Image (cartoon, rainbow over all chains, first blue to last red; front, side, top):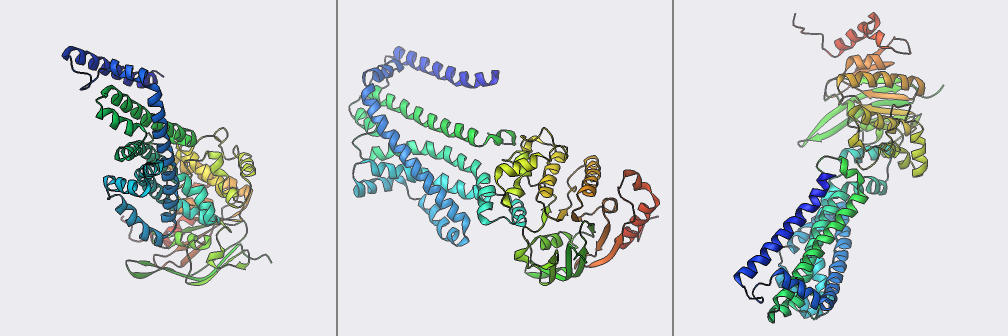
Length: 255
Length: 260
C-alpha cells in the first residue's frame, strides 16, 4: 500500500518541483513571455482560452479515437489473416514492413491533396501510425501460442475454431494489449502531425497558429493537453488490460 | 466376446529428419483390453511417444491398422476418441484450475457452465479442494499435474494415453502421484497406455509392461505383472516385484556389461 502511494505521489512531487523551478528560473532571468512563458503564464492561458482549447481538444481527441479504432480493427484483421495462412503471410508481411519505411512526412501532404482539409486525412495519418504495432503484435501474439497446447487440443478433437477461440486468442491478448499501449501513444502524435500539415482545427493547428503569433503560453497549454491525453489513453488501455487479463498478475515477467 | 479396447496391427511409421526417412516404428502389434493398464518402456528414440501420437490421431501411420473399440479408424478420424496427457501439464495460464479441468468437456461440446459443474464435483477427490479459483501460476508442480490429470479423466474416454505424466516431478511428488494414480485407476477402470522410462514405475502401476526396442521401435518383450490389486508401496520390495524388474531390465539390455 505504501509502495502504491509512493508510486503516485513520487511523479507528482517531481513534476511540481520542476514547475516551481521553471517559474523561479523564468522570473529571475526576466525571460520574455513569448520566448519562454512561466507556468503561471500557461495557467493564465488555460483560464483565458479554455473555450478555444476545449474546442480544438475535442477535434484532436476524436481524430485520435477514430484513427486508433480503425488501426485496431485493421491490425486485428490483418494479424489474424497473416496467422491463418502461409500464403497470406508470404504476400502480406513484407508489404506490411515496407509500408513502415515510407515516412509520414511524405504521405501526409499527399493525403491533403487527395482528401482536403477535413477530418479524414488526419484520421488516416493517425490510423497508419497506430496500425503497425497492433498488426505486428497480433501476428506475434497468435504465433506465440504453445504448439504443444495446440497438439493437445487437436488430440481432444478440437475444431480449428475452438483452437482459435480457446487457445490462440487468449495467448495473443497480452501482446495485443502491449501493441495497443504503444499505438495509442503513437496515435496522439499522428493526429497532431496530420493537423500540422494542413488543418482548420485541432490542437496541432492551434499550436501552429499560436506560435506564428508568438502566443507562446497557449502553445504550452496545447502541449500540456496533448501530454495529458497521451498519458490518460495509455493508462486506460493498461486499466482495461488488468480487467480483461486478471491472471497476468500471477505470471512472471508481467508488468 | 468383447473386442479389445485398442488393437494395433502391423503398424509402421516413418518420419523425415534432415531430409532422411527414418523408421520410428516397425511392425508393431499391441492390444489393450477394456480396463487394462499397459505401460510402454524402451530406450529413448524407440518411438514410444510416436505410438501415442499415432493412437491419438496426431501422427499418421504409413502401414497397419488402429482399431479402437473394434472400429478401424483412419488417423484423421481418431482425434477425440482417446484422452491424451503429455509430460508437460499444458494448463492454460489464463484459465483457473477449475476452467482448465473443464477444458476437454468444453471441447467435446458440453456447455461451459455444465463442464465446470462436472469438474468442480471431482476437485476434492483429486486433492484440489479449495484451489478451484487459482491460476496455474499459483499452484505447485504436483498440483498442476493433478489438474491436468483431472482434465484427462474428465474427458470421459475409455482409453487414456499418458506420456510420462510424472516425468517432470521430483521423486517425492512422483511417488505420491503414482500411489494416487493407482488408487484412482483401480476405481475408474479406464484403459490406460502409459509411456515411462522408469521400470519400477511400470511394474508398480501396470497389468502388463511392453518393451520396445531401439529405433526402429518394435515390441521385443511383454511382461504380465502378477502383483495383486490393490497395489501398495509394500510390494515394491517383494520378490515378485524384483523378479519382474529383473526380467524387464534384462529385456532392455540394462543388465549386460555390469561393472562388478
